[in-house]
Length: 168
Image (tube, rainbow, N blue to C red; front, side, top):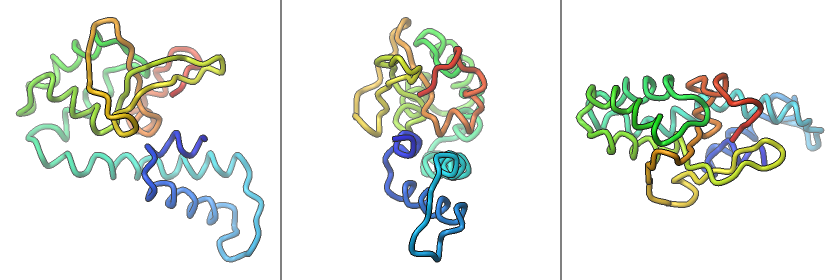
């Protein structure tokens, strides 16, 4: 579950993590191995920056200014945020791009940077709909809650701006 939550269900990312896991556990060439939960967490953590860059790369050259606007937008938002906060930050950032405010929000959503919060389970995990997994259209209502995908949360250090112990 931990691996799937951090990959956006892209098979290539899962394979990259498993390869890293085998290397980290020193069992790449052995027939059997013991994989610990710490090894899984470390492997996922070390692959997350590459996963995020792979997701971003196709979109960065499409629109002028997006390469700088997306990181700036993400650095100004907490780990979990409202539609009102998202609109406020994109209002400041979108002007440096050739996109409208809504187009920039929609692009970030379609890349999978953030998703719409649906629930917070008793273990403190945020259940959210991300575009990659559900294809749900972006609706930015002022009171609606959003959160960063774990991969992008780490890339843009949003995980350091969490509300308590909540995590996506």
